[in-house]
Length: 258
Image (cartoon, rainbow, N blue to C red; front, top):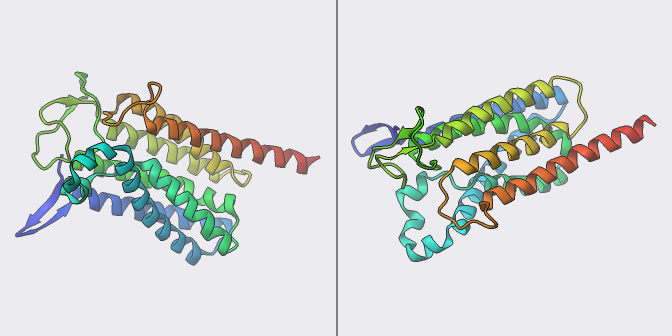
């Protein structure tokens, strides 16, 4: 774990921040490439990506505070602590905020909603994969204790609230690997003949399944609801949304064929 890539005097470069930035740039590069193939205006797509990134950061932090509201009420100083700044927040909170903003932006600029989101889906998976490496470096989003051969043990005092000297599931790396595979699947689907909405629909379905499973190995400080974490309930809701998009796309396609 390397929470700081390097330090010069009083200045230090957080590894988490660098990897999140690299993830955003990698995701944006893929999105722009796919947008060009789809004939969408790259300037508007770039602006949308930036706005969604800002909304995603805000949404992830807001959901983090909401999920752990008891802790933050008891420790108000933690709102602006270094550990809180390092923490990735709740990804689904960021995704929901970004989706809402994207819908408003696409309406205003008359962009095709499903076609535009199709261009974003592979890049989101790639950027998320790189960003999770930042989580691993910072020591946030850690897993439950385990004693498997691939367990990881954090020892740095600068880790973001992670238990030290305890072997844990490397859930950050699980998610990185899963998102890289998801990126490959979505990118390949995009390059084949597909209906508008298929790519974002499959992203929502497949990522929701990935996250639902990984949550069983994650450490949870928030209370469970019916044995499941709040993140798992959100994942289940987004899975239903993704499935609804796929059904609608297929239904519309069949209607047009007849």
